[in-house]
Amino acid sequence: MLNIKDHCFIENVKYSTKKLKVNLGVNIFKAGLCEEINQVVIFRFVGFYISDNNEFIVVFPKGYKIPDSEVQLSEDIANLINTLSRYQKESNFDPENTQIFGDAGNYTSLSAANWLIKDFITNGIFINNKISYVRNQNNNIDWPKTIKYMNPVISNKQVAYLEFVSRKKRTDESNLLTRVHGYIVYQSFKILGPFIGLKMPPELIEYNNELLQEYDINQIIHFVEQERNNLFSDREVHLCNKLIEFLKGNSSAEADSNIMCLAVRHFHVVWEKICSFLFANMSANNIMPNPFWQVNDKSIKTSQIPDVMLRNKNQLYIIDAKYYTLYKNLKGLPGWGDLVKQFFYLYTLKDRVDNIREMFNIFVFPGTSNEIIKYYGKAAVEGVESLGHIYGFTLDVSKALKMYAHYNSNQMKKNLVEVVQRSI
Image (cartoon, rainbow, N blue to C red; front, top):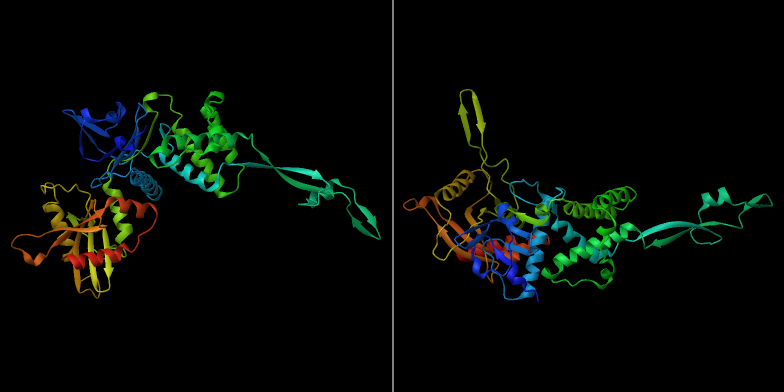
């Protein structure tokens, strides 16, 4: 029986190779997503990976704690998929940062599989309704064809039709597009279902035929592209795009590159997006002064912009999303550079935002706690009390992923203000 906990890990945590219950294969190391030193492996990405040994691997962000409840773990896996899918949709990916390539040709997109599952739950299998024409049915009369093909009866100088041409919809259940959709949704449930708490729907069992034994995958891709041109509904066109995305990921002729991956190498950019979504209500653009270099007759500006700014009446919160692992021995906390930058943000904003009486410097770290936001500690510069403090808080990773994935900020701005005021 599948134990999904055996497949779940946390970025930057050390795991003994002797205790691993999954076979990582070799490609994950070749891709630089994992490294092994002295019989210890460390994952260097956040997301999902299916190894060359068909092992499904889930890597959660720093600060996350794998729960005892498998139901909660399945929910967190689903939220992580939706978080990365949302980030994929809203951001321009840097190839160095991510392996999310929906149309790269050698990666099957788990993002597409996830979308197809959700679409199926809402809309079911695609059914191609064909229009046929029949005589003498009073419903859905096609008047142009009736006038063209039927002979009228003229009585008292009036034209009357005793026979009609009517439109009739019929379902083409043998349509290849229906079969392609069913087959791919079946494969999507087979891959993701056990990890996100979804059982295989009985109506998909009939699509468990090896479609690729009948057709070359490139022929299927070409067919779906042609069918897409004949569809008009936005949902059906988008459905075809996702089917193509999934199929292209399986079209690689090289076994070594035929892998599934939805993985971000540098999750700090996603953490910044999450914190901005939850807490930001104003922009620092056109407020922060720009540092510049003056070289000969040329002036080159650089930017300095806080990750997140939150205004609450006459208070200003300057927030930096810190994607750090917080160790019990306090090792690896933000150092001089991070602290000075944050102090400088407050210093330069003092007289640039109207009607502000109080300003607070905040670091937000990923963590796990019953409280969604929890006070961690504060930083200062010894002997320079005038700089004030930078207050650190942890944001529960599980709850943050859920809110970001479901586009629900859930009064987090108010919550942060209350926790800050209660803690300092």
